[in-house]
Length: 462
Image (tube, rainbow, N blue to C red; front, side, top):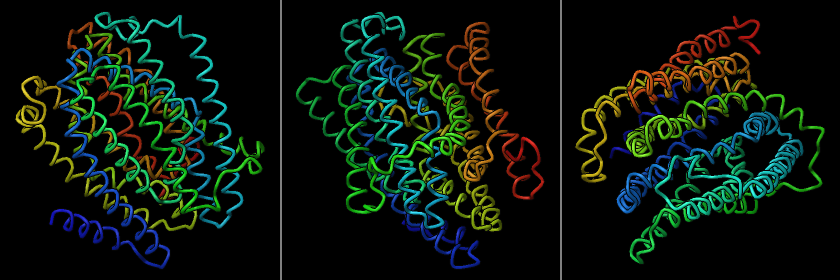
């Protein structure tokens, strides 16, 4: 009944914008993505709720914090596609919208080629540095056996390097407004992960190394399998082939991609570095508190993310076709949904101490202030995405690039000031992220308003 009510509300919100056949088709695609994604992510959330306590309770806080920090560092390799994946998303949407199938195939094939070369380079460089790197020092994890830690890092890094290239399929799904494929493949990956964890648990083989190896391997295999299924059974005419690789189109992808690269880099400094900063400025155990609080709100924002995700490429298509009123009305409706999320976040913070005890158990003594600060950080991110998804879809992101770089520059020194100098601990790191997000929360709506009303000039319109 709840699911049916939610879909009805979304239909009323979105279909109120339809003024022609093109708008109706676009809205229908968003509704399809929303419905399938809601079911897929809902099931994935249930599986994650079951899996996380098993891992958290079989590993101690220290080991769990170390693994969360390690994966945060490794995820940084996604950055070094230099924005190619995001550039492909916009360029592919533009080409496919206008029926340019061969050009679409060139964009896809060329992007796969570049990312494969980068991925191979990553693996070679890491193998050359393998004996030099000391992960015990990097992660501040002196209580864990160094050989085990180095082996875990090698497995995780190798898997993420493979995923680096394979996960471009997700951007293709987004570009073709089939974001629900991402959620379906993610759900399958989580189901496999749950069975693997249960096997490790009941065979008494669960450990930091086994959990890391299983999770990273599944994260690499999932997009590979999704790619094969999609290209063979759904979009065979877009299958990447060597003969469609054309280096002439690399600047076309990178011209937009480089801007996305700096945005991704800056946001990663703010988002993914929190685990690292807490580990270094405070201790690995405090990472567990932050990670649990963040996990709680990552589940909470599920419905919001499902609706927002397909809008990026929908905005690109609508902008290409001149459907400005559809964009304005959609932004208005998303703001209304954000208010519902704000009310929900307040309720989640209030009940969080009881929820953590039921969900995780007695070990989950997450401070209420940490949950409150993470809630504010997540809400600011949600507010920003209302406007940034439109700005990204249009491709006028130079001003956004400048803003996010400034946010990244102030984040780490401010985190040190609050966490270490003012002795606020892990809370100080989160407060630094809140301060950084506030900058974009002010300027993103201004830029979106100017673009839509054709008053954006200079850097605001580049």
